[in-house]
Amino acid sequence: MIVQLSLRGLALSRGGRRLFDGLSLELRAGEACALTGPNGVGKTSLLRAVAGLAAIEAGEIAFGEADPHQARSEGLHFQGWQDGLKPARTAREELGFWSRWHRAGEGALPHAVEALALGPLLDLEIRKLSAGQRRRVALARLFAAPRPLWLLDEPLSPLDAAWRARFGELMASHLASGGLVLAAVHDPLPVAAKALELG
Image (cartoon, rainbow, N blue to C red; front, side, top):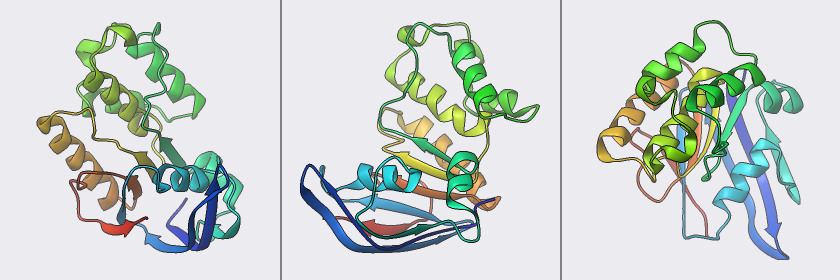
């Protein structure tokens, strides 16, 4: 169980260009942090580094007392700015796949469907959904296989005002139960959050 995320003195480059150096952050259970800054300053790269998908050049990423490999494989979700859904699959097939892949417990999938109001969309192919509907299916994976640390890259961008507010409620509930959120955003998060500006 991840109850803490610590970034200490991180340095990361991309394409031969140093994105940031000496970056530090402490995030504990129940806390969120909004990563802000212009495009290209390293927000997505930082999320990928925390998820173990990008190498850092210096510093340390720690998950409290949890083993880093186990924390990454069992304790976090990385939701990129692309939804990562198979266009030919139905929403039901997508959520079923991710639920099985993450070995989710009984009842998690129905909860995800209810939380994001996906019942009417379950038998539709992903390619037939609007951008906002696809994002709701993608975000439902956070609930179909619950994990404490959410790494989110522009999670709200295609959502309308009502669904931004609803996801804010779901995020607040996640934090209240001891979860953590690190999100790259251009618009403010709909929950109280620390701020870390890059660039």
